[in-house]
Image (tube, rainbow, N blue to C red):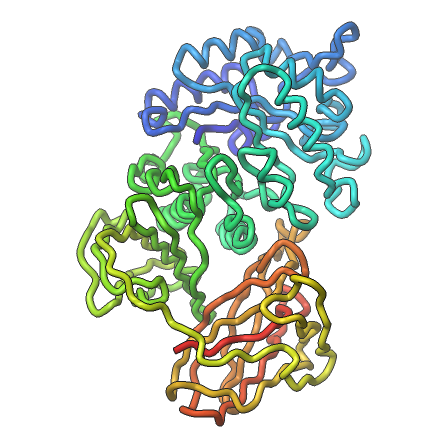
Length: 526
């Protein structure tokens, strides 16, 4: 938890800016709540033309015009305030946001020792100029995706004799990023940058699904800095933004200006919510997982995860642009009854009939903590239908997978476009009407270059039951490569009781992608 200069000041920090915002954390009471890291982001060294590295020692040189006291004195001042000193560099030739400010590629040992000598407590380590001195953002080459540059800095940090927390900013590009990030880092950025618009929030959450599952104490998926307080979102959107970051155990790094005259009162209240912070900082360190997603266009989710002392967090975000009153079926969480506390309304009560009522503003959420939980059986499968059982049309095709790929089967159906379908017949349902369906799917179409425009990190899927109207869902990333299966429970209407059901899976078209998610199979739940 802490504050970073980038969101408010881009790559133009200064000593006066750092001191203003550090003092603001104290004056606003935020440091007492755990926001204690103060990070100087990109732009602090001299340019190469001005002598960005000392010719004798090879050390990076701070821009004394911007930071007249120098790093050691600034770090000591922060430490004297009870705060931590966060430094920044990158695993490339130059720092992000510049054309001539040096980063750390090739100088890892020298820079790691410098960070320690300056009293640095954390290092944010970026990924710009990874392959050349002229291309700032390369997200497609093998080298830009390689873990090795980040592993080298981790190795050097381990040698300096100072405990420096290591925050990767690799952007989540390539495959199996959590697999190599967790052993070396305290956090890893799993997406392109957040920006000052609502649509960046669902984009990041949809990409976070497989990354957050890998989080554990000491190593957390980083959904990027908070834009709470930057007047980019309305209060309901800020509550959803902060609540989802809290439930998914993302680092809570403030990006707004820490000045009471600047930060909106609602934003300060959100950042100061002790109950949301407690969810984020829970000692179990387990991120909430996506349990069920309801059909669009007014889509809403249920996310849930374990907390200490036998409690659970339940996050209910509304991605739609209209308010909704909904009910959460607690049986999906294995809960029969519980007491609940809702964070944003500061209300509490007990569940009735295994249901939890939620009132959701447009682009808003409710965030619950369940306690005194009595368990109940979760819905169980009454029939599995694998990819090889589907009848395919159009461009849809069956791909055989190897080893532990495409679980729980060994094949997947892909390339389901607007003119293609996958059809399963003789599907048995325990009842007529609405039925829970658990879909085994694969989507690894992460939208990095498209993040600033239409990128969503979803693939759309339609299902027609027994010739009825198509129902549509948005499927987030499933895993960390194109053979890593995810599971998503959805509620599908139109079934008849018994074995006389036909399900047609398709793709509705649109700008999110060209295909539906790859399908490994599905289960009908009882």
